[in-house]
Length: 254
Ligand code: KIV
Image 1: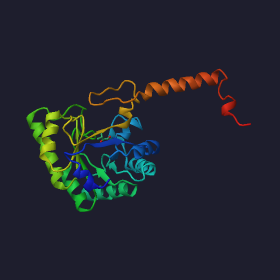
Image 2: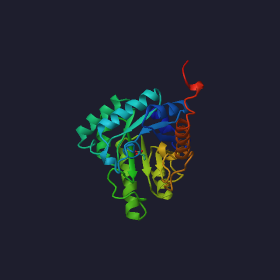
Image 3: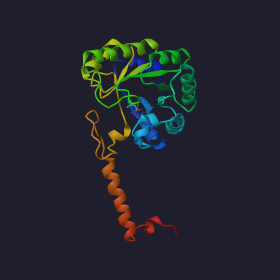
Image 4: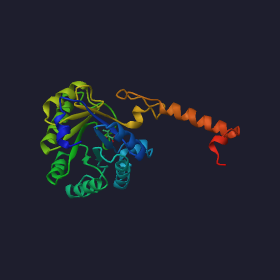
């Protein structure tokens, strides 16, 4: 996917983006040709089990971006700049180049239009991110519900557009605000909990596959119940081993 093609999809064709953190998932996404793969810093939560994405390091992002690129040789990959890696500007550029070196086609930063502008001026493709910013949010609630906060988010999105971002993620805002922003900026908006009027949608792959039993945020639709399936499968394996039924002849060498 070329950046120009992605931008041309605005308003015409919904853009699909999903996170991936590992080689196997990347292979699936490459095979089905998702528009964009995001190596999100949500890996801090779903891969490493941290409470906060603030614990995610550049080292982790580099390793996981490399793994995803090995599994998705031709896909368009965006890598998140982890907390603390995107300021000051020169440090942000150094880190963005490391993520590109690891296989990313573009990077994503939360807020910070001035940094986005500097990176774009230095030939880095940047995806913006407004609304709920998980790296610095005090709690994970819907943003932009009152007019002051809605205006602030709209202004930020416009600043990211002006800074040269090729797309902007809108996270956890009312649908109407998602619609207003989508109509107010020139580049595609990609929503997560931002309603149906965005130019595209992104979700965390672990969430849509139902990998966590009791995690049901309103904006996530579960397309599978892998937690239940995995639990059932592993219980059967344990039962078979305890009963002496595995390995059987079919799974043994002569
Ligand atoms: O890290 C992530 O997965 C993200 C998405 C939620 C947009 O930033």
